[in-house]
Amino acid sequence: MLALVCTLAACTPGGDEPQADSSQRPSTASTGERPGAVQQRPAEPGAPGIGDPYYPDAGNGGYDAQGYDVSVRYDPGSGVLHGDSTMTARATEPLSSFNLDLRGMTVESVHVDGAPARFARRGAHELVITPAQPTPADERFRVRVRYHGTPGRTESGLGSNGWHRTPSGGAFVMGEPPSASFWYPANDHPRDKATFRLTARVPEGWQAVSVGREEGRSTRDGWTTSRWVEPEPVAGYLTTVAVDRFDVVRRELDDGTPVLNAFAPGSEDLRAEARRTGEIVRFLESRFGPYPATTAGGIYLGADTGYALETQGRPTYDATANLSTIVHELAHQWYGNEVSVSSWADICLNECFASYAQWLWAEGKEGDDLDARYHDAVDSVPRDFWEPQLYDMGAGNEFSGVYDKGILAMHALRRQLGEKTFWRVMRSWPREHAEGNASWPEFERFTERVSGRNLDGFFAAWFRQSGRPGEQQLYPGTLSN
Ligand SMILES: [Zn+2]
Image (tube, rainbow, N blue to C red; front, side):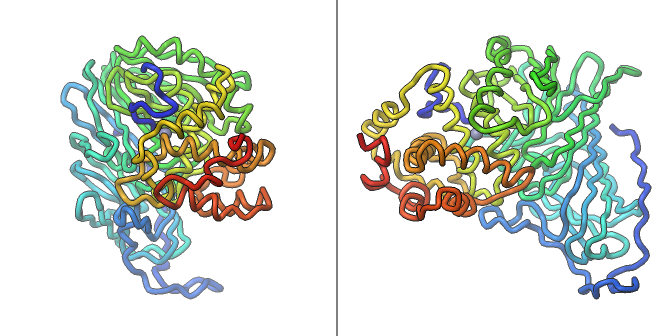
């Protein structure tokens, strides 16, 4: 995500077709009836949160989502969305009930493995589902939820999260930390990534665009249906759907990766920048290693939301994005998407890295002297610039220092490690946790392992403490000249 504030880096201008419930619920309930099966604990309700201390109710416990198959029908005229979503998951403990996250919307029915299940709504976003029979640990199960309503949104530190309407009458969903649960029932926390498939129906003349590969489009009886498949695990907030009168431009990267740029009315100013997508990906590959996403491109909205978001393989840009924003959101494909945070306290793993990519672009493409830039910044920033902690900054403060202090911290880290080691760390980190999750403390340990050095003092001064780092940490390596 990149807010449209003048950071150190960005001061430039700028369906309801029924799905078969084919699998059958196993007849064994909760105890080891199968020969050789491990004795199971009694089934209990799954936790209403995944265990993120900042957002205790975010996500859910007791299962691991493997994939979502979401069908939506959306009419921009009425603003009503009809959804039919199936989550395939594996129980990680014997479950008498479990939760999904869903904000607003009217739930019509819930089926677990084809059998009707009881459900209740609790709090802001808990959909509590009680299957007819308990779900044994390690069993795969399928939950189908049919629902409808006008999707909503909430305000967060960065802006508006959730469902937005566009000036042209369309709509899109965008947000962080929560996002998926505004439009489909999900385990809405990046710790539980899953594959994602979307079938979207919109009235003829409108187009839906999502993440993943485009798997066909057809129009019948006044409705256009499009299908999208993201075969790699994706965090809920990195999925999206946008409905508008898009002009869709399709290209390929040199290696055949499909590029799809969708331009909503009002986004014309960004076409020249969007044409540089391949060049930006190639540049970032030269620094970070092979591009990790299955698609590239962008969704260019005509709307002004105040921020852009790195939706997987196809970031979403609001009307005031610029070239630097595109560099930032594409860098997230390595840092944030391929390797995602374990908890929201780890957000620097996404934002410090993606923001530093904007400096790397300025260095590599525009010949900027980053040491000079760094010195200028250190000498000119106000005292409160140093206040935010970059790790474990507290709920609601996730985005306060990571876009500017985070850049200086990354540049200092580079000078602290030296070129060879820094680039080894940058390139191997996404591979080390490919398609997975990691925490900030894991990154510290990883960097110490790769460099063979104890970096406690450096990490404490820059990332774990508030305030300006001491001279030794502020001017490592060539920065001391
Ligand atoms: Zn970002």
